[in-house]
Length: 336
Image 1 (cartoon, helix red, strand yellow):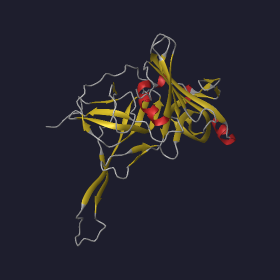
Image 2 (image 1 turned 90 degrees about the vertical axis):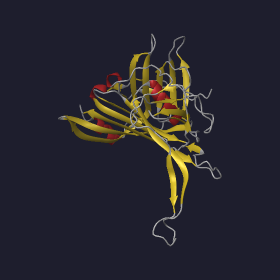
Image 3 (image 1 turned 45 degrees about the vertical axis):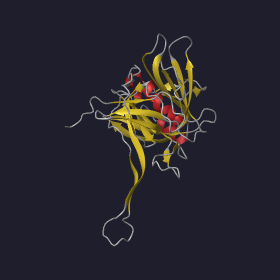
Image 4 (image 1 turned 60 degrees about the vertical axis):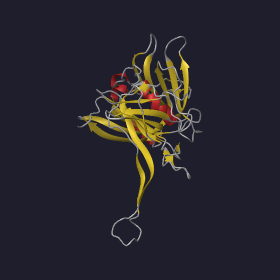
C-alpha cells in the first residue's frame, strides 16, 4: 500500500557536533517544504572502459556515499540561525538585560576549515532515520511584495544513515516573517552593531534575493572503509549574491553604477513580539556594496531597475553581518 509523508517530520540538534562521527541529541522540530532526503551513491563503479571480451560491464562496486538535500520554509529567526550559523562559522549570543530575548550576531569566520555540523532526524511517513554530520554549504533568503519571506538551506552530509526511534520534538514558536515587515535601507554607516543614517527605499522594492555560498564539499579519507565522508570542508572561495528589483524614481541607480559609489546596505525584517520589548528579527547588514549592474526594465508597465550588487569585504566588519533576535537562549554554535 502506498505511504504518505503527511505524518512525517524533520528535526535537528540545536547543539553542533564536536566531531563528524558523534551525533548530538535532536531537539528542535523544523517545518519544511519539498522532498525528504537519503544518502545516495557518490561513485558507483562498473568496468565499461576495460577490455573484457564482453559487450557489457562484468564488474561493479559501490565506492562511497553522499548526502545532499535542501531545507526550505518560511523564514523565522530560529530556522535562519540553525543553518546560517553552521554555514558562516561564527555566532555571538547576547541576552537583552533581564528579558527572555537574545540577539545572535552571525559572521563569517575566515579561520574555519572544517564546517560545523548538526544531527538530523527525518521521519518521511514510512521510516525514521538519524543522519549525523549535516552541514550547510549555502543558503538563500528571498522576499517579495504580497508574500512571506522564504529561506532555503543547501544541506551537505556525511552520508551515513541509522535507524532511529525518538519522539517528535517540539518546535520553537516564532512568527513567520512577511514582506510587510521587511525594510531596505541604502547608505549610512555601520558601527559593528547597527546601520545609522541610511535612506529607506522599501516602498520601491518589488523583490529581493540574498544568496550565500561557502562552497563546502565532502572529503573521503584514505583507509576509511566506511564509504562515508570523513570531513566536510569549506570551499576555497565564498560567494554572496545580492539582487533587488526596484521601481525607478530617477537615474540615481544608474549614476551610482557609473561612478562606482559604495554604500552600506541593510535589510532588517522585524516580525511579531518576542517579549515585551523585542521582536522576532532577521537583519542582514552589508557594510560595503556597489552596483555591478543596474539594468532598466518594466514591471506591469512601471519602470524598474534590476539592481545587482558587488558585495565587498570591509576591513573591519567583513562582507556580511546578520543580527537575529528571538527567545532561543543558546549560542547557535554551542557544543554543550
